[in-house]
Image (cartoon, rainbow, N blue to C red):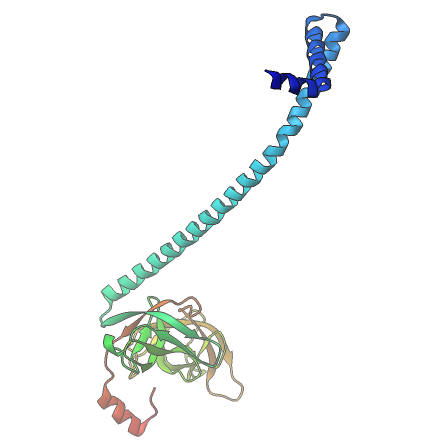
Length: 277
């Protein structure tokens, strides 16, 4: 008790001030005078405004934290949407590849592209299938939409494919509409060339071009692309014909290798009398 008295004596000025304020508030509340009511009203409004102002401070921190949570949630949802979109596209592509494998008359080995070299004139792709999967050089590479290229090198578990966009690539081809024969080559552009088509042949823009029966490597009727441009060459008997490939090599991810063996007897015979197509 004595300790409490000592504390009150030490802070007697504050104790007296607090007592007087309490008495003043009681008197203000008990007085019905119009001026007192006005003072009371202003006082309540002032105290309310101060409380609102003070309440903003913790709200700022709460809003900042809530904003951080919402941003993190947005990032997570965006990532989830991207993964679902990727899974959907992959599922669609795999379905198309499955349809191709089911209706194909050839034995197909599916492979994924694990490497691409699209910076030079000799563009190639690397596949995760090789000799252990039955893959050997000169086997055709296709996708669910058309011709990709051919295998040029293999190891136990990997293989390298030469795609159509390669200056060394050649394939016997034909116009599907009228069976006009030509040779597919590439000179560095976005399209491939259909060579050896004379000016007298009937070729139209939009014609479908496929592989022909005359190739020693590629089976016939594999879609290559569409005629996108026809130009006349001055002083030449042949036209310049551009073919837009049906395969999008930039986005290509999965392919098939046709494991049909090359007819070695035919190849050996043709090498004696004519260049390999």
